Length: 87
Image (cartoon, rainbow, N blue to C red; front, side):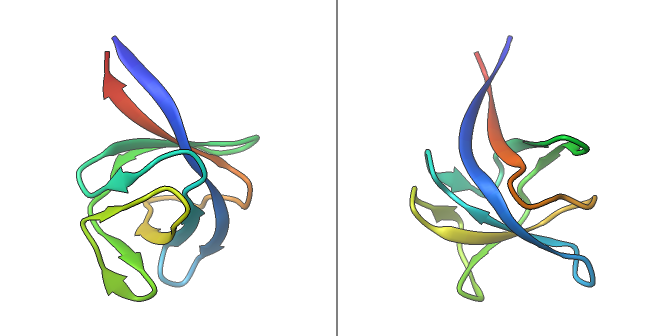
């Protein structure tokens, strides 16, 4: 059974490039993680395929970081970012 754990919150969405800005408030995130972005009108599940910190590609970012990831759909400020782990 899958377990969801909060790792952060969406701080912005950049429509032209399809990128979400995320503040990692509760845990680390790495490329390959399965995530769910959930809010009032948002419910998106996808794999993190690439991630940047201050315009530099990274494989992993720790709690407290501001990261940017490519997203398939529009997300909104304050949406919750959850990492999905197989329980």
